[in-house]
Amino acid sequence: MPKQTSRRQRLFLMAGGAAGLLALAIPAGATRGRPGPPRPRPVNSAPGMPRWDPDPQPRPPSASRLAAGEYRAYVALAGDYRVVALDVATRTAVGRNIVTDAAQGVAVAPDGRKVYIADTGQYDVLVADTVTGETRPVHVGPFPRDVAVSPDGRKVYAAVTGGDTGPGGSDVVAVIDPATDQVVREIRAGTAPRQVVFSTDGRRAYVSHDGGIAVIDVASDTVVRSIRDPFCPQGIALDPAGRRLYVAEPPAGRVSVFDTATGRVRGRIAAGDEPWAVDVTPDGTKAYIAQMNDNTVAVADTASGRVRATIAVGRLPASVAVTPDGSEVWVGNIFSGSVSVIDVASGTVSATIAGGTGTKPVGAAPLGIVFGRTPS
Picture (cartoon, rainbow, N blue to C red):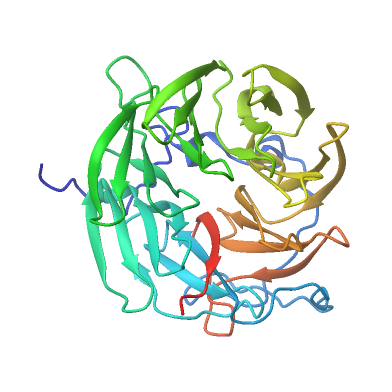
């Protein structure tokens, strides 16, 4: 099948069809004439972009930060057509930029030597060698939105969202063999698959789609349970024990918590306007929810299911990822073109990574954030 026309001029995020996330997620305050909460300001600005003033009182990093060079963060910059690698401890760029076309999801092999990117504009998953910088496309189908690598590194799942959430739309999760970087089979998961997450033990994978959640047996690559959810599920996350699945439901303004053993709802977390992404700390005690139209992140106590704090970040936060040691939460802000770094201990934004010629070169719609080991 020939390559499709580039999507560089129009960013489609498949938020229930080709209308896209950017069209539906205009910040509520902007449309109602009310000023939003004060937001941290990036420390520099990208060339050609409006000037940002530096934060006059930058906060020091937490004492529990990961050691320099141990981990990298890979940030998919959909509007800047690249994936950038950052040293997690120093927050500075390392390695080479990976050229993409409206990339969204990103995943890293366990040894850190390969990065898999949902290259939405080209209908491919792009495989990048983090040591040599070489890349190769793997054709998976229309509008791949997310990609995930199993904990043992033996399988890669790609959510092929397609451009239509109605009858005849894509329902495919493509299975890629990392040994050959070829699609070896397709799983019919449900219309418009959106996000994929593997359990810690690698036995199950969970895929959000237009009608709910597909539970996949990884050994056989088959759907073993379908959890119905009519509230347009988007971002999903598992607790470390693999017993609870957290599902962001933007139209309902909440995150639903499902029991993975039974598929039943165990609780609801009331969130703000358009909760889009969610992640859970390694100890399982907190869930961080990106509330797009509120320009905030909610911090929920997983034991009680209540939001304990709300943290102002950038404009239109749509991705959230907790660092492997649980000390920080990185939040991608689409309209600000920045990443807000939340210090978990203090519950405050300790840094804002923005574009520019300085030491923090990130900008342009960070839609995917993942952490991986620095390749040896």
